[in-house]
Length: 322
Image 1 (cartoon, helix red, strand yellow):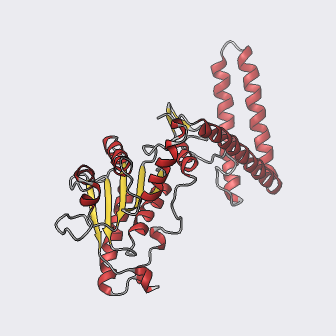
Image 2 (image 1 turned 180 degrees about the horizontal axis):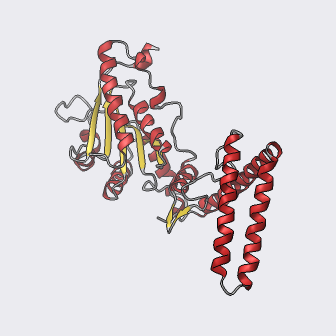
């Protein structure tokens, strides 16, 4: 995947440089701390460095450098074992003085082979949309069933929460990739999707949570801006579109934009989740539904039982119980 935005490339280069600066500072401070507390470690490190340098000089001049390298490597390995014992004896982990990285997956290079690392994709998302849109305090760890007014609602929400956590734990190998949460305002649809998003971020996946209103507003803004700088909704592994149905209905823009985003992501096997107060049925002409508001093409993509896990949330409004 390529990210063409010049603004992002500048942000990425600055971020990589800052990561390396921060990590070098941490490495230096750790060495100073350990060398001061445990001078024996300083002596061992100096000895390993001297052996490595001597090995390099001798192997360049030797007829059989492999034997020199083998002997030197054996000596360094024994010193490293001694070093590890001393470190653990003094309360440190054996990797405490190893080279440090912000992202241990790509080792702060931004790439894994020819592909961009997920940390870079998340950085691109944060750059384009200002942040991921997630509230870190809304997580499964902070999930409070006591907000439900009665035991029936607590039992119902407990089952919904467990299914959401199961989805987040098994992602991306879920039976159904996309999610649709629908129900009355204040029942916890957004909170549930935020919990899933936070869990996926913790697991190393890229996530964006954006309201349908903001998505359409960004579309309008980019019509006036450089097309190369427009947000790429294919970037995140998991896209949350919140409050579907509250965005302005602008002819030739709203439905077409939402349909385009959903189609592109489904065709690219990227997971998308929606939260809405709209009804999913079309039987009652008096009730606004996804089909009546967006039409058959969008509804057939969003309400597809084989592809989408559709979850009704029918508990009472928790905002009114606080």
